[in-house]
Length: 285
Image (cartoon, rainbow, N blue to C red; front, side, top):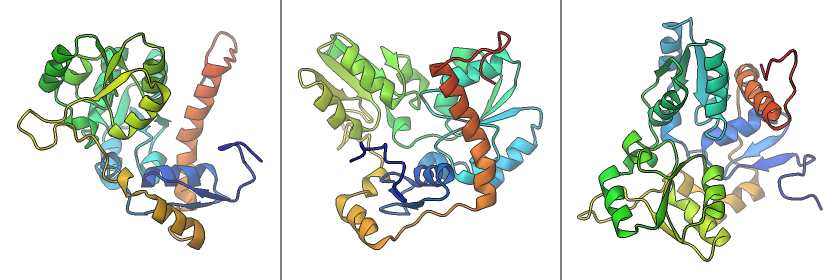
C-alpha cells in the first residue's frame, strides 16, 4: 500500500479545505478528478481579491512584477508572475528584490508588510486580510504574556504588525509546528487558527499551548481564532463526496495553463533551495 500522500496513481483527489486549495490541486493535477466536501468553503483573502479589480490594479502598474499568495483564486494566480506560500515568501521576495524588481503583492496586507519590512523590497500591497489572523489583539496578547512570563509566542505573519512585534518566532504553519517541537519552553502562546492546537498538543504532550486572544476581557469569546469556512469540512460531507463524486472542482483550462506558470516558478525555486543548482554563480531564476 502506498504511503499517504504518495499514491501518484490515484485518479481522484479529495481536498478537505477551502476553494483555492481545491483549484490549486486541479491546476497541478489537471487529469485527475478533484472533489471537495463543500464547494462553498472559501477564504476571506480569496474573496477580498476579485480578479477584475486586481487585474486593473496590475494594469495600472505595468512595470511591476506581480507576486500573489497561495490564498487566491485560479484567475488571480493566472494574472501573476509568481505565486508564494508563507513558508517561501521571504526567500522569493528577497530574490526578486536582489534582482532589482519592483513588486505588486496580494492579497494579505499584514503578510505583505512583514515581508516588506524584512526584505526592504519596493512593494505595492493589496489591502486584503485573513478574518482569523486579523483579529488577534496586541494589548490582550501583552497582558497574557505577563500572566505567563515563561511562555514563548508563536505568530503567523498574516497577523497585524503590533502582534508580530510581540512574537518570539514568526512563521508559517509548518514553521510554528517545528518551533514548538524544538524550542525549550514549558508554555507557548499561539497566534494562528486554533485548529492547529490539536496537532501542537499531540506532538508535544509535555508542553502547554495557549490560544492568543482575539478580544478583550469583556468578550463572550476571548479567543475565537477559527476559520468558519474550514469548519465546513466534516466527516459526513467528506464521506458523501467520496460516495457520490459530487462537488467536483473545475478550472478553465486556459486559466489553469496561465496559473501553472507562477506556480511552477515557485516550485522550481523552492526545489533549488533544497537542492541548489548554481550556474555561473547565479541562483534559481
